[in-house]
Length: 123
Image (tube, rainbow, N blue to C red; front, top):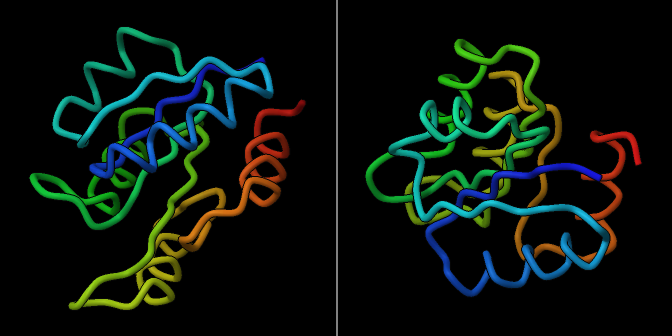
């Protein structure tokens, strides 16, 4: 199974996603934001990153760009429910344009999450 780094400032969403993925057999590392993304990826050879877009300190699109530069082969899933400044569709279309391997709109369904993750990590 895969080692997955989950980045989201919503503690409740992180717990839910972690529980679903671990039940499927994946190992999940959590981060409330992407400030230390390069260090985290350097310390832990993750197979996949799941990141929210709208977060304090550093948004998911910046994280995606950093990952594409430092770890170009890393699989990245971008999730978003949008916000006052940008609807989720706009965030997710931009993420695809910037190189996301997949996008998921919030609220996240367990079925869609598992299909996307398992499709990307080859389980």
